[in-house]
Amino acid sequence: MSEKKSLQDAYAIKTPEDSINLYRDWASSYDSDFAKQNDYRSPLEIANYFDKYSNNEDTPILDVGAGTGLIGEYLKLSSREIDAIDISPEMLNIARLKNCYAKIIEADLTKRLLIKDNHYGAIVSAGTFTHGHVGPDAFDELLRVTRAGGLFVLTIHYKLYKIAGFDKKLLEIKKSITKPNFHEVDAYGNNPDKDHGSDKVIITVFRKK
Image (cartoon, rainbow, N blue to C red; front, side):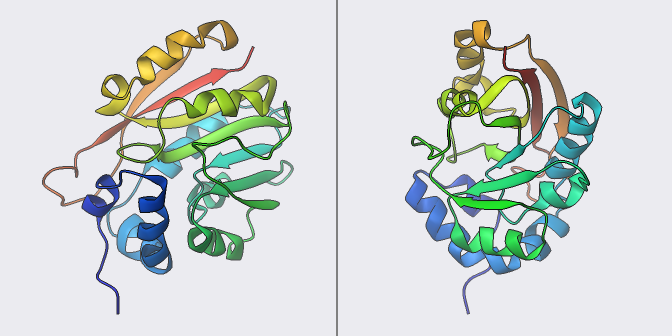
């Protein structure tokens, strides 16, 4: 029986290979012993802000770093197609069982994606732009696969916004996007972790020009 995983394990990730190894072991219990136990709020907040900012043209949607499909569950889409992309096949297997997604894509988000230019009408993401996971350079590739006018609604860990260079990346791509709207929210409602239980994320919203 594998050792129970925690937020500390997730924040210790350094490479894509670390992600694959961690989530291979964590996938089957992630929803129950992490998301539910800690009241992991980021996916719900993303769904709520997507509803606030989106329109019927924002489709198809790509859930970036979809994991076990928590955003897909919360969005409850009836007329818009949503695809899941993640590096972990085990996490994606859980997402597939929820029947939220039209397509499941296993890929490393730090590399070029096998997705055609200007394909998606929206990008959503929760918990991917955080400690040791995916950095701001991934924005270039996500912009490539999103068509003009496409909506972005994603979380950036508040401690990494400047440290990891997300602020600089948004300035770098400012001619390609609308002025971002920022909403700071609690990542967890009930996380006892003394170091990270009160962590916040910055929900970042913009459109591709």
